[in-house]
Each structure stands twice: as C-alpha cells, then as structure tokens.
Length: 119
Image (tube, rainbow, N blue to C red):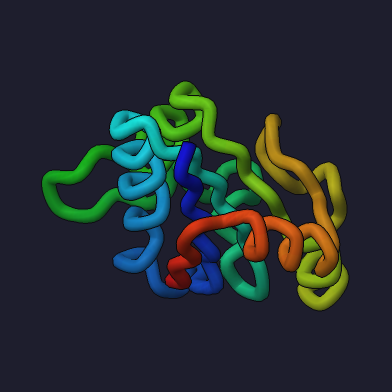
C-alpha cells in the first residue's frame, strides 16, 4: 500500500494553512493510501486541547470537525517532542489520540513514505 507523510509546521497563527493536511490525508485514506500527519515547530499548536474548536474559515466546517474526520479515517497524528519543549508545552496539553514522537520517528516515517508533503 502506498504511503504519504504530511508534515505540518504552520500553527494557529496561520489558520488558512491548517486544513490541508487533514483533508489531504483523509482523501488519501479514501484512495487506499496510508497517511500520517507529523506536527512540528508551530504546527503542534493545532493539536492543543481547545484550539481547533476556535478555527473556522468561510464555509468550511470547524477545524475540529475536520480533525475528527481524519481521526475517524484512521490517520495517525504525531507531535514532535522537541517542539513541545521548544514551545514550553506539556504532554497533557494535547488532544486525545496523538503520539508524542521524536526526531528519529520523523526520519523513519519519511524514509518509509512514498511521498512527503510539508505545510
């Protein structure tokens, strides 16, 4: 099965950039493509509890709804451990169901993927 890794570096300060990895990953799964999303740098802010509920752009559903659809599709979410330290966030600050992972995990995911797309 082909695999795509989406890397989200944009955070809640650029809400227009936040929908793409979730929509693309959900679409990939519907196309029988395995998809993971790795959040790093400011991208981890999107996975903080309560943040996604506050983001809604135009006629799109709330970002929380889009995240829930991606989660229901079986997409794995990774939050960079080093980025949590960089931004002073604790493991308990994030939504349920994410995996805290280090740099080696990102490297492994990228090597295993057929394609890597960064936002």
